[in-house]
Image (tube, rainbow, N blue to C red; front, side):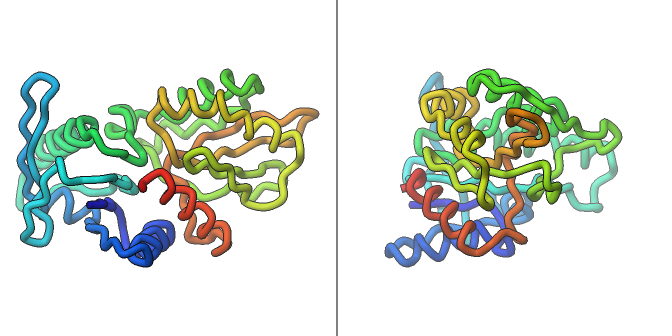
Length: 248
């Protein structure tokens, strides 16, 4: 049983769902709003043993029956206005904490298996990921730091600047947004270093932005929720195929 947490309007979610159905598998698709406000669940933990279920569209789907989970949540949900602000804040944090614990405990493949920093919108999270990956790739970092006034992490699309090129990472495959220089390809294809970073970070799907304005490319940003709705269909198709290889 495959579970997709995301929106039908997300072109990557739509393409992966289509490809799964072509393979004879109908995944459960749950939007963020439905997951956090209309999907009852039970989650028990006893030492290292976990159990429970998600009630999806009236069906109890046991956690043990899940083969893989794709997490594509923009984290924009907020509890309904029938609660006062203090209760809304409490429900917001408790719901996030519960799902972080649930998804972290799953023994099946989870793409992406985000750390707590992502769930709580820690603005230093992308910077830490980027610096760690740049060190593993033995390249310089040219960090694009977020504005501290933005208050939360926002999913981003590719940087349109001519001095930036994007390479998507899906499992062990690299899909360039467009033609990239050989030097960027050489950095991005350092698979042992990439695999180690993926294992340590839990990130199997992301976009790597490289600054190519200087003599050598510098890693600018590791986007763990790459927005692809404006991306070329053939690129989205390649990313979906590579992601599906991980999920299956």
